[in-house]
Image 1 (spheres, rainbow, N blue to C red):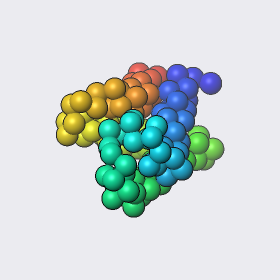
Image 2 (tube, rainbow, N blue to C red; image 1 turned 90 degrees about the horizontal axis):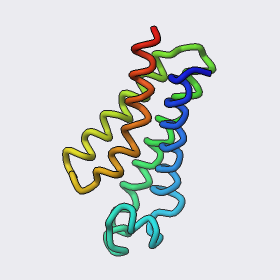
Image 3 (cartoon, one colour; image 1 turned 90 degrees about the vertical axis):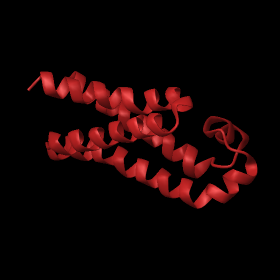
Length: 118
């Protein structure tokens, strides 16, 4: 197992976690605190959160699918999208720096490992 697989695996695991937050426990006090939303706002945003959660799950699935198929380009694409979303999160809400780092650091490390180990 190399650094590309390790960091892309961490990125995928984080996105499975985001899926759980945005679909399974959305609206709970813990999720509301993490996303800095009120219970009323969480209820209003539930459909969008669930949609975003599945988006994150499908990105996460792309990583092991790329490994299984022997297609690193699939893993690179999934990680690039994860990183892009982290950049947008920080650009739109600088107060969410911690979340952007959690979302963006593993895929950027995976992409760097891929780039420098080719």
